[in-house]
Image (cartoon, rainbow, N blue to C red; front, side, top):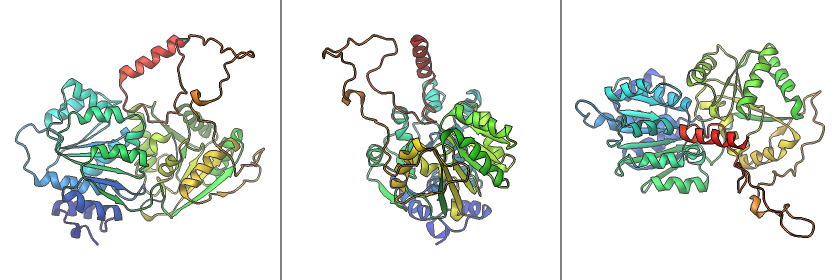
Length: 448
C-alpha cells in the first residue's frame, strides 16, 4: 500500500515525498480513508506509529478542498493538545505536510506573550493547534472565534480527559459548532476514559491497530534493583559507560529533575532539565538542543512523555518509576520509533516494587531484573508487593477515637479537607487558569 492509494491530494503526496515518506503506517492506512469519508474516528495506536499524520493529512486535504473564506478567516480546524511541546510539534508537522497548500497553521499555548497570537488571528488562521488554557483566555477576550470549526481533534485524548482538562474541554466545546467532524487519537484508551470520549463523538468508527497499552516489540526492557539513595550513583555509572548515546531520563518531580540535572553536570555529564515550571522558551530551547544532538542527556518529568518525536533515540531511563502504569508506555515510547530498536532501563527501589508489578501486569510480560555489581539493594524486590493503601479516608477504620470510644472532636483548620489529596502528575496544571493558581497560593498562605 502507498499514500497514493489512500486518495490523498497531489500537494500532500509531494510534501510526503519531500520528507521521504512512502508507505503509510497501519494507523494511517486505516484512519485516513475514514476521515476523508467524513466519519468521526476514535483511533488508538502505539506511540511512535504516526498518529499525527493519520489525522493531519486528511484534515488538511478536506480543508484544501473547501472554498477558502474571503478576507479575514477564522479557524476551520481545531486540534487540542495537553502540552506546549506537543502543540509545537504537531503544528510543525502540519506545516510540513501543508507546504504546497494555501493553509495557515498556528500554534497557541501559554508561557508566551498574547499579542503575537492576537496578531496571528487578525491575519487569519485555517488550522489552530492549541492548549486548552491559553485558548480559553483568547475565547474570553474575544480575540479568537471558533464558530467556523468543521474538524475537531483531541490529540493524546486519554490524557486530555484524565489529567484535569475535562472542564476546560467542555468550555471549549460550547464555542465549537455541534455539526462538526470529531477525531480522538491516543496510544491508550481505558474503558472509563473511552466512555467520556464517546460523549464528543457521533457514531464513531474505531481504529485500534495494536492491543491497548502495548509497546513496540523492538524495545528491550530491563530493571536494575537498587536502593533509592544509590540511584543517582548508578545512573551516573550507566551514563558514563554509554557516553556516546543520547539518553532521555525520567524523574518524578520538577524539583527532583532540576537537582538530578545539576548532579549529572557536577559529575561531568552535561544535562538539561525540562518540566512544567520552566518558561516556554527554556523548555523549547532544551528540547531543540536535545533533538539536534547538542545536549546528550535530557532529564524530564512526564511533560515530555506524550507525543514528542525524538528521532533515533536509543535509550530511555526511568530514574523514578511512574505512579501510573500507563505512563510507562508513553515514557518509553520515545525510543524504538518507526521500526528502530530501543532500550528502556528502570531503576527500581524496594519501595517501588508495587509500581513495577503494575507495569508488568499492564505489559503482560516480566521485565528482566539485572542487579549491577556494587548496587544490590538492602532488601529484595518482593514479587508479591502491593501498592500503598489508596482507600478513601472515609472508608478506612477510624483512628480518631478516644480509648473509651467517644470520637475526638475534629480540629478546625483553614487547610482541613475531607478526603485524601489526589496524586497529580506533571503537566496536570498545563491548562488551568491563573485564578485557580492564585486561589491555591492563597490557601497555602492561609495554612501557614
